[in-house]
Amino acid sequence: MMAAAAAATSSWILRARRPISSALLARRGNPRLLCATICSTSATPPPPPLATCDGGGGGGMRWESTRKKRVVLRVGYVGTEYRGLQKQRELSVDSTIESVLESAIFKAGGILESNYGKLQKVGWERSSRTDKGVHSLATMISLKMEIPDRAWQNDPDGIALASYINSNLPSNVRVFSILPAQRSFDVRRECLYREYFYLLPADIIGIKDGCSSDEVQEHLSEFNSILKGFEGNHPFHNYTARAKYRKALAGRSRRVKGAQLKSKSISSELSMEESSSDESLTSVHDEEDVSMIDSSASEYNCMKDILELSENRVQIQARWLHEPDESDRLNASHFRDIITCSCGGLQSSSGAQFVELTICGVSFMLHQIRKMVGTAVAVKRGLLPKDIIELSLAKFSRIVLPIAPSEVLILRDNSFCSKNREGKIVRPGIQSLNKSEAIRNGVEEFYKAALLPELAKFLDSSMPPWKEWVENLDQFTGIPDSQLDEVREAYRVWKDDYDRVKMARKSASSV
Image (tube, rainbow, N blue to C red; front, side, top):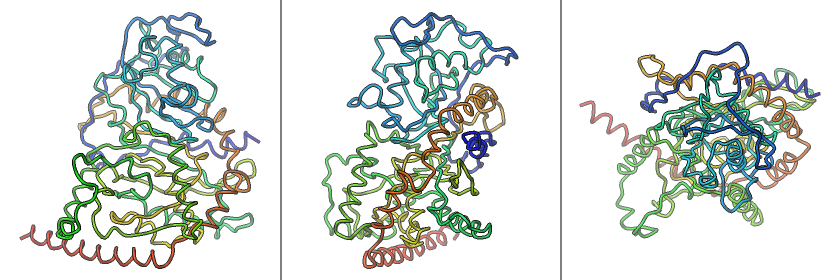
């Protein structure tokens, strides 16, 4: 049964890397260089670095470290049993991926005892942060690691080095590769895009058993049309806990006087809109902007808000911010670039039909993808109007939106450019990571052995978490007409004024 599941769902592991548009590269600017020494690939298995048995009771292997070097690790994990990626002080040592990984690196000899438990001392950085229950095949971790002599001799992909850390890890976490990196390499800011997959039971979007091929295509076409509304550069403030991405306004009152606010013209609003949008193209914000967040607590608060609203028969609340509110203002970190948001064809695993959503963007905020999926499903099921996505991406709208389960969300890939604008290879380590067949094989092996069996548990819509989620979605999701009409009218007036001022500026600049 699992063989059929692997055949049906693992093909995307081997897909070619998504090409990056020249426009996106231009916006992202010239990233700093990553210099690495890459040896020629050997046909025989590389020898391991010098090592001894672990004497600390960890049961794994340990190398003899001789020097410290900044490295970058590609890590995969099954996130079901963890409280997210990021280490959190108030949680136990085995409750997050980073806590478990740090412990394994320490046991393997990669972190000194004096630095253990203090990630800042080893310059620990991550390419992105995942929520509780989310899985990954491509998280990149960078740190200054104690390494053995000639660590990459006959091991250009760092697979043998990674095996020592893996010997100290549980089976649901895997290091695929360890590569040398320059001290100035910034694994988060130099990441060009992140690509996630979300597996959605097909009948949740109306594709039932017995549907004809034409009916299936009609459902998929409609759902793709909904998802496409997320593409582009937008403020996704309604798709996260936006207060956690808001900088504190020191020395200022939380709300400016009404007379002062009313003096602002639509022209100044346009300038603010353009400034935020432009800044978001050059500033790299992602989940790391939220420092030490307990994602499970944040998710609890999000669901608590919806349930409290449901008790009053108001399930999705919508309003328009008619006056700027200093306690609820947006900035560049709320704007995100979504490159692709689409749905693939119908697939089957262990008798369960599902569709595969691809969400590719420069960066994402806490819960953003899951709220995008939840909103799109609600629109497809007729629970929310078709224009809710456009309205929710308006800067002055404030709308509560549903959040989809985390158990089937996977970080599949991320991209780092290995060439400069002249086409010269300036990051041989990253190029090796991109092209290495051995690393791809390791990723696919982990997917089939560890991640796929876990995903297969969550593809049946009649089982948790889908059964309860769909019941709650159908029962509680809805926008009162009065609130929706208010937002629509306010948005229409604002957009008319916005377009008018924009055209006036364009005409003035062409004179």
